[in-house]
Every structure is written in structure tokens, then in C-alpha cells.
Image (cartoon, rainbow over all chains, first blue to last red; front, side):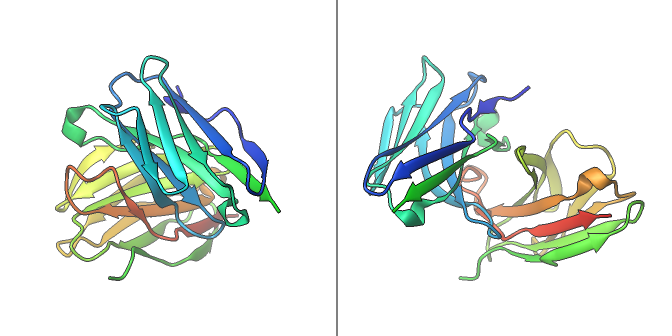
Length: 114
Length: 114
């Protein structure tokens, strides 16, 4: 049973345009959400996170939106750059005072075309 | 500050053998988590250690085990290797219990079972 779903395995975007990566979750106990970026032959690197008490968090070109009623979050990258080409993982955690492991989606491969 | 290191980076083993992977967390980090990444499956949580104790465990068979030493370094062991164990094994460390969300990943160990 997949608790965190990234339904788009891949996404192609023109340089300078907006990239929107989506993530859905099923566990209503999740209260903290993160996005990681992964380049080939490297471990994932933390990008941005959001707590369930917020509906938006912004960091430079990256913004994460959370819609709790829809159990949906999205990552917006504006403007997209070729260096953003990577696999993006959505992850969630929650319940039990935070001592719960991260649950990851299967990832979305973003290709930014120059 | 040095990042998370994992050794070896690449490993080839034969079915039926056993393997031990090592992870050194960021200095001062007491929590170490292990993940398995296979194509199309995202990151699957194996287990987490905190202060030498296993705190969380994922849904993997007993062939997968781990431990953590007093200096927070961690090892994971896989016995009786199967072809399906071929994967990238990632280790992540975090500083505080409540901060386990923002995990810092190592580069991973690529295990190939033939």
C-alpha cells in the first residue's frame, strides 16, 4: 500500500518556465512533508519542507504548497534551469511525536530543456 | 563539516553470500537510517538506529539486519543474498530526535548480486 504517491514518473519543461511536481498521500497522520532532489550516483539532498500547519513554504525559486483536505502537495520551481534536471522525491512523516521514518514516493524525473 | 560517508561505494556479490555495508554519519548526529532504492520503487525504509538502539524498522525480511556503534557509525548486513537485493543502499543521518525529518544522505552503496 503506497502511502505517498508521485503519479508522474517524468516531466519535461522548457528552461525559464515553471516546473510543477505533484505528490499525493493517503495517511492523515502525516504532518510534515519534504522534497528531496537526487542526481545520478549521489544520495538525495534535502530541498524544502512544509509542516501541516502551513499551506505554503517558499525558498528562492522553490515553493511547496500543501492542500491538507485533498491530501496533496506540489513543488513549484520558477524559473526552471537545466541544473534542476534530477529525480525529485516527495517524503512524508508524522505521528508518534516525530519518531517515525520518512515515507518516500517513487520519484519524478524532471528534465529541463535548454 | 564532513558529510555522510558510506563504504564501499560499489560491491558485487554472488547469490547466497552475505554482505556488510558501513555508514559514518555527520559528526554529532546520533540517528542513522538505512534505505533501499531500486528502479521504479523509490526509497524503501529499512531501519533506523538512535543511540545504538533500533528505533524503527521497515517491512524487510530478517535477512536484513543492522547495528550502531557508540560513535554512531552504523553497519547493515544482508545474509543469504538474493538477486532481488541488487539495489542502491542509502544511509542518512540526522542530528536530533525531533529533527529526523531533514535527513542528510550519503552517496550510497551500489550492490549487485549475480
